Image (cartoon, rainbow, N blue to C red; front, side, top):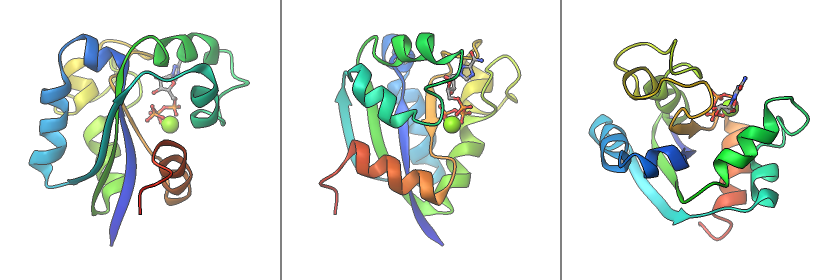
Length: 136
Ligand code: RTP
Ligand code: MG
């Protein structure tokens, strides 16, 4: 079933010059870019995006990180795109993520883990509306 998912190439991806590398993996997999934008977000948008995490202890440093510089927000589309993107991203903690995944190959951090991918159809719909309210 074709799905859309919200993906972020977080500020560490941009700072480290890995946008091409990471985006290339999604493109090579066969996913289609249907929206893409480089932007620096404020705390309000971070709080909206991470609504499920705002009360958690790890959230304040996460908010500082995601607002620390430009990131690339995109919507990817394809068959089972939500699960496929999460598989390509790998486990949350880059130190534990399997080799072959984006985080497993390129991140050594539990916070600065390069990418975000929506975790369900409900999350994808909610997040796409937050980041790309005008996308048809
Ligand atoms: P994401 O939402 O970014 O795709 O990542 P995820 O589902 O694998 O992980 P999630 O549990 O949703 O956590 C969101 C982001 O918060 C940072 N994090 N820091 N204990 C910590 O310090 C901690 N745990 C999570 C990561 O940047 C994670 O991607
Ligand atoms: Mg998550």
